[in-house]
Length: 560
Image 1 (tube, rainbow, N blue to C red):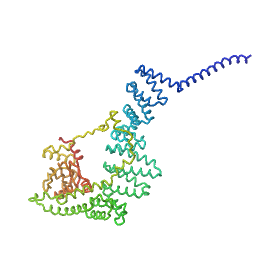
Image 2: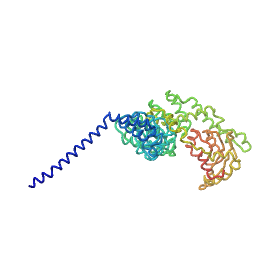
Image 3: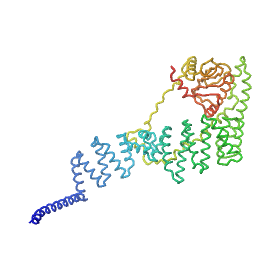
Image 4: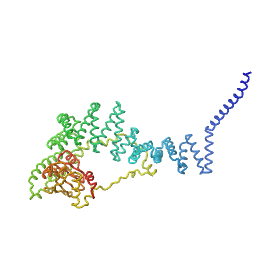
């Protein structure tokens, strides 16, 4: 009896389940019928007729575009999406539609239109790090460096998220834009990444070495000498450096130069003595002769001219094509004239008496050294210092591939790449010293002596001055607030313009310090030093030189 009840109950339930399954199959079948090509074509034809009758039926245009996109009619879909975009159909949804268009243009490999969409996305969503980085990388790769920097600036704090190629392009873009501090930040991250991922592949080491050379050069030109020193010392501490004699020589050579640029004279002398014993002139290898040239310069600026002459003569005897850029005969002539002038001026100026001082007013180094040799020497020092500069190698980090007409794209997007960064150049305060009277200039100089240099001016010094044609000057004998009044310092302010102060003027100033009976001297200039003058002043304990930017800083509180 119970079984018959169960049977009666199960029969209708089974019928209902079967009917449900049949209905589901029919639905799926009908759905598949709609996906058949003939049905797609029919739907597209219907939509096209509707649009033909009513071109302003934007919903139908959109529906048509969606179908065309779905069934790989990409170019037609793009045409309809662009039409709707121009008609502001997607108002409020522009960001999403540009992302869709970007994807579709990439699909058909239309790089120009794809880039336009990427630019639009980055403009609409400035906080989107992914798109800012993407745009910056594309622009940098296409040579639009200044604009690339603007987009990299949005995400530079997230540089740890950059891919290695993105870091390389960012470094090149900032370098071209002369934003060296940012180049350093980027390359430090790149160096860390390359060091972490280093393998035994030779190309990996070459790339790491390239980045290290560029970084050292950047530290030097930005006057971050302590950073250059610590970074170079970290390289020298690695075991791998000993397995690469050529790079080991390069690092030792540039490390000596870094110590030469630093204030640590003892460390420089110690390394100089060590390397001069290691790289002897008679035993030097052809690929190491460059360090003998270095020794010639170091002896000139730190030791004595005669030793420098000896080294330059040996460099001349090497007859190495590497040194063809140097006019060695003129260099030797210059050194000889400097040596003779030093003896002659010491003798002449020691004979100066108060009644006859006008006779010696024109007695200075420039009178005894041929101007042509002076120019050749200044250029030589510049060439030598440039030999430690590997900045141009930054362009070898990655091959820049220009694949689109970037100027045309930026123009069509109403972006002016050349004017995206406008430098605001203000007249510096130091430039205003030429517009005031000499008495006012003297008042300002006395104020700087007391409040900035912390000296007490004893008197204005007017004796035995050297007559130059560059402008006027004022000189004071003073003593430091924390030192004996007998320890006088000659402080000289030049009001010169349109010139660089060369080494010979520094030499003249040292003569003047001795004649004034001062222990040392301070020279304050509204202009810059030449490379040779800077080296000579840096390694002379008797003088301290302040140039344009430092003078400007001293004037920050003055009422000019």
